[in-house]
Image 1 (cartoon, rainbow, N blue to C red):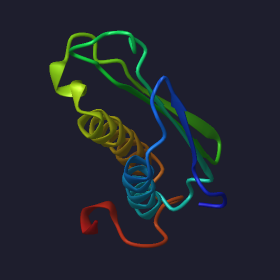
Image 2: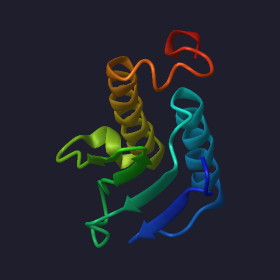
Image 3: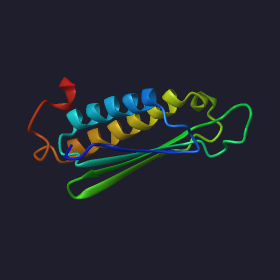
Length: 119
């Protein structure tokens, strides 16, 4: 990746542990698809005033040559997303699936480096 990932917290206190987890997952995405040029991650708790059952949303915007990829995980009533790390994991898993499908369609462009099956 050309630039360090940008991480934005909305309605959530900034956390060094969350940032490290996001940076680790971003690095894994760039190993999967080396042409990722930029990444912006937004961690949001849109219903911050709730006392119980806080559900997190994580949005990713990836820039790759010729495309921008937007992943929005708005879980609705998925109580698993009361854990911020689960919400982050699910968003990055969705991004990974999208990058794998695009790599399959553009096999010649991504053939430099390890194959997706090797990762």
